[in-house]
Each structure stands twice: as structure tokens, then as C-alpha cells.
Length: 191
Image (cartoon, rainbow, N blue to C red; front, side, top):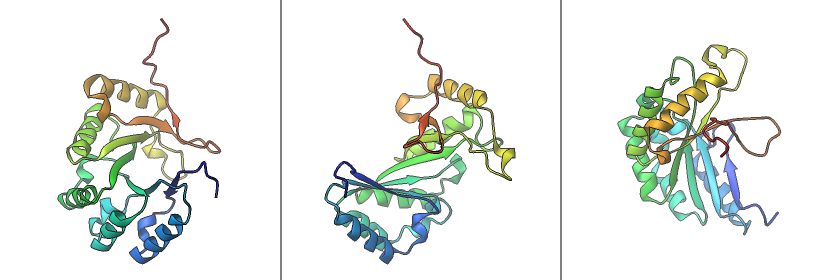
């Protein structure tokens, strides 16, 4: 009921694991909060199961009182199938803003060429590159981690070769912080 809160984020687990009726109920509950202008839905499910974007889901997005923002989790350009591209086009057609956040993963997308190809492919399909996360160190996945220095070097290279609007922000998740923490790429020198 805080009037300063204007956005709700559906995340954690994957909100699209819920059925459309439940999502509709959630949006109806959100409608009861007058200050909410945007609902952001973070999901990887459409990447692996594009058919999860159903006609009913498209209708509830189109009829929502708030702006719906879908943040996909695509880490490599090869993850963007024709089926996913078709579903993204339908989301955009009903007024959904589509963004992407990726994680930099060793052996998957830790090169300038792969990052640029991902950004280009996303943008071609009208998906805005938004965040590129440094890998969170989690047990059993250390083989995906790359050093901060390498990630910064890759992103500095990408920035010199691609238009700025196509380059996601390099960020890290820090426990207890209210938002993502931007990683300094060391691009600015004092005058």
C-alpha cells in the first residue's frame, strides 16, 4: 500500500510455471493497488517452452491495466528459436515490452563475438538487451564462473564494436542491495 511503489516484479522460481488463471488472479489483485504502473515478469520458460505463451496469456497481457514487461533469460543466440521469435512478436503485438537478461558463463558466452551475436540476435527480434549478470558463485556450478576482469574486458570490447543501445548493462547481484549493482567498466577518465 506504499504509494511510492509503482512496479511489481514477478520472479523467483519462474512465474510462468503458474497457469494463466492464476496469473490473471494475480493481475486482478495488483489492480487493487492504484500506485502500480508496471508489472515485470522474469521468465526463462518461453526460451525452453515457447508454447507457454498461450492465447490466454497474450489476452491477459493485453487487457492488463498496467504496462507488462517480460524479461527473458537468454544466454546464447542459439537459444532464440523460430518458435520463440514468433511468440515474442505476439507479445510485442499486444503491447508487452520485451527485455533480456543474461548471465556471462564460461564456455557458453564468454567471448566478444558471442556477446555481440547475442545482442544482435536479440535486437533483430525486438528484444532489448537489458542486463548481463556476472556469475553468482553457487555450489556445483563453479565451472561456469569467469573472473570479473575477463567479463569487464569482454564488455569493454563489445562497447567499442556495437551501438550503445544494443549493449546490456554489466551487473552483479549483491545480497541485501535493493537493486542490481552496475560493474564499473573503467571507461571514464577524470578530466
